[in-house]
Length: 243
Image (tube, rainbow, N blue to C red; front, side, top):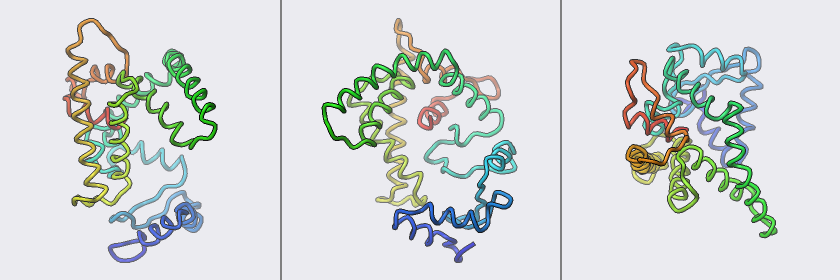
């Protein structure tokens, strides 16, 4: 369990500074976790159980209220997000997302949209001669996501969303210290700005008259809660941001 209060965070930080965090994780797993597929430790301010095998993960994810997921922090991802909801709400949302992006008809439609965009990206990379692969691959990927999820075309708004998500992710991976200057505080600010952007896009969809889209936001506008009621704008915002 490591040191009092700090647990094993000092060791994890040390290996993170060395840019080899996997070595710490794999050493713990080899020593404690490869027998029954889990071990206990103390990380991020809480006693924790680390699971190592897909079969063990499946048991936990299907356990209902026995194991409650407390990470990522719901302040960042939202209490109605795919990462936070449990039971029937999670199953319903997950089923919808899978149908939208992973069924034959959906894959065919996605391929028709993505293929010309990726060919254009490859051609632009060839002209550059030398590229930073991560940065170059990320841009058309996020452009595709913007189109498929919210019908947004490449441009300043999508670039702003991309930057805000980068700040959001840094907060998810950080200690939850809600003080100015911390990654967590910055992530909460990014989340509020993302909510404002998606509220505007949601209102545009409500007010449209002739244009019809079939993006993920349209479908999530139709999903209902456990009582059969339409989701609130806050619930929808949680789900847009997480997805």
